[in-house]
Image 1 (cartoon, rainbow, N blue to C red):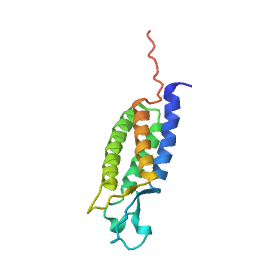
Image 2 (image 1 turned 90 degrees about the vertical axis):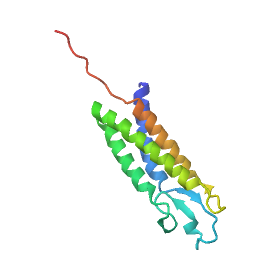
Image 3 (image 1 turned 45 degrees about the vertical axis):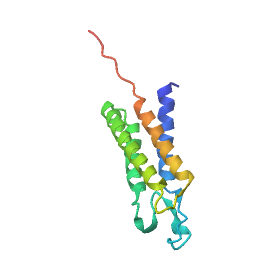
Image 4 (image 1 turned 90 degrees about the horizontal axis):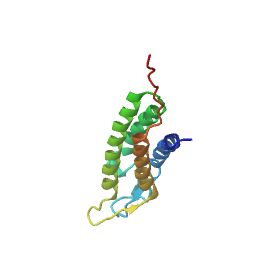
Length: 141
């Protein structure tokens, strides 16, 4: 097995892990203005009164596209995959900063889901930089 084929499989696993991480808790806000304990835990799909949006939807869409492009053995898919994962990394960094920033003297407790999300999108970028693609050699006549 070559380095790129191992990285390809790790990238496919990172796609699945990224989608799972969007359902895990990202941050816990100890804000007394938030009514219930369940509403204080934010995930990629649920925030209090949807104030931070639902970044899990966008990350899931990006991940599904990246997963499909990783399976396609075409050069254009590998190039598009690099561009899409770079956009995904930017969006993941924006979401990380948004969910972990303090507001009104309340600093959130960072949970495992946000670190898994950030780590898996970086693994996806590395897998997109080194695609598993066998190019055909042109035969000289």
